[in-house]
Length: 250
Image 1 (cartoon, rainbow, N blue to C red):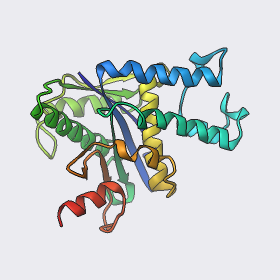
Image 2: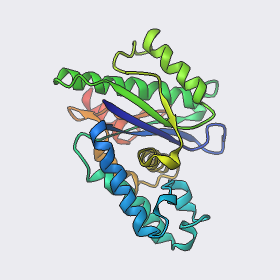
Image 3: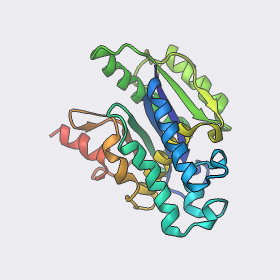
Image 4: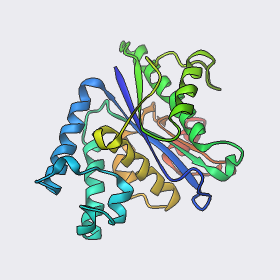
């Protein structure tokens, strides 16, 4: 089974932010323990007495307003975010990052959460299809952080499997999404960091975190399919997703 853990960054209704990002980590089920173990080790180094209470929530680490991050310097806290992302960067070749970046003003009449979710469902299905073509016939499962969107996203995923997305019916998902508390899932916490790193790359033009994991986004023949940037009126975008697609059409 291939597992895609998803979490978001940015506030969908907050129009003072240009972007909303849904990001995730795809791993084979046997690899999940590795990420949990590595993040547990990092938590142990931060709070040896209570490592289980350390939740790697990137925006909280960056803000340094709550324990244990409030006791760190800015450099130390940002180093933690980079350490989390480096676990992914140095992990299995088959572990893949995914993210959908939605420019909210380009889709004023639509829900950016639903746009991003449909897009990533389709991209994950495409990824699973490519794996099946190479002999891996495992199906996929979506695992998301608990949110107010739980009911609508479950309905959307169910409809995708029967009625299809705008790109076709999803044929490789084993079930509707599962929702978990991020505090109990280190892999959802990793997904949170992927989303946050991508959000800062687009919202803040700060690529120092994104660059650590840029090589982990799913790609085929040099085209980065794992990163989707949805923005009208920006044909010259230089992000790795847009740039690789333009290059493939030349």
